[in-house]
Image 1 (tube, rainbow, N blue to C red):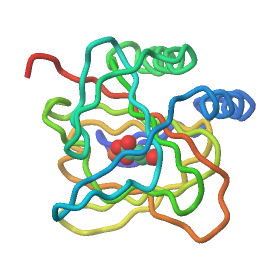
Image 2: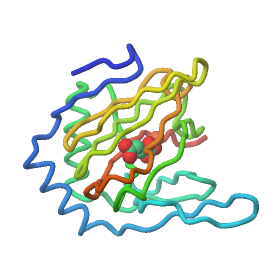
Image 3: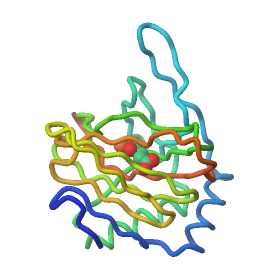
Image 4: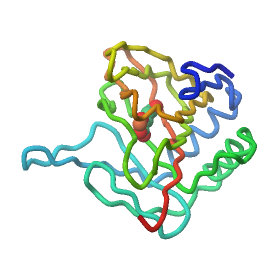
Length: 194
Ligand SMILES: O=C(O)CCC(=O)C(=O)O
Ligand SMILES: [Fe+2]
């Protein structure tokens, strides 16, 4: 376990072993109802360069790039990964949903953002598990503008917590290198009744 930014960013490189990570990648690639997400900018609709799915406890909804999504039922493997992560953190952190991202190739990406939606509450803990191809995450300090790059290997778990979303923005940049497809699961806790 590496504390990359004290109190804000933790990386566990081999949370899931390589074989199991590959099995999860293959089953989730084929068994998830992936869909494309659109974002409206300047009155125009743009297709986001990746596929997504949103799963979780029944009846939750999440506003993401100005659209409201309701949860699909948990895939059993996703649910078991969620429980393993909660146990890793001695059940002090609990999740009730997951945003799943599927990066088909190096042209798929995620732009700069902070996961600071109001329904996540203050100082949210978000656990991000990577499967499939290795991609780089860029992390930028909002004040100093200092840029950090980390490689997210299959089976690795990144925990964003504390004031991370307040102090930093993050992105998955496009790459011209040939990269295998990648799936990322970001487990979140949505506070109800906001
Ligand atoms: O794909 C990743 O590693 C990052 C995903 C992410 O930042 C998000 O879903 O908010
Ligand atoms: Fe994010």
